[in-house]
Image 1 (tube, rainbow, N blue to C red):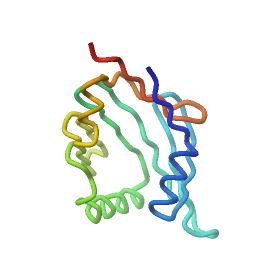
Image 2: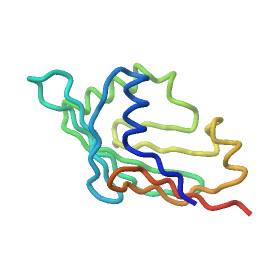
Image 3: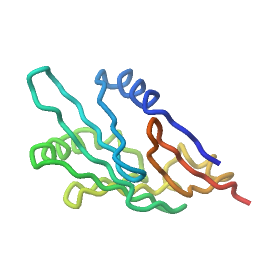
Image 4: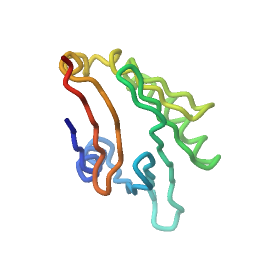
Length: 134
């Protein structure tokens, strides 16, 4: 079973929640580039996200960016620490994000019925592949 989340849905959510609208560009099935231009004459802030591995117990993402953006990411993670749910560990030193689905309260009910299998980036969507838990 696939849960398909279009990039436009993601962008609309981010814009409504944070008042910014980044650009999402698929590199391949495992890599997605996220960029945001704060002002017309400023260069875009760009981060490449990579799905390193996916299992029912853990999702490992990594990100690549230039040193200036890396400093910004560290500041944002520190500032919004209380908003990051239990079960999501962001390590700015290794540029990795470890997600433990069973520890995220909002996912507990769904995980009684499905098991996470894969996450892939398509041309216009993120596809979350789950298997029915029997």
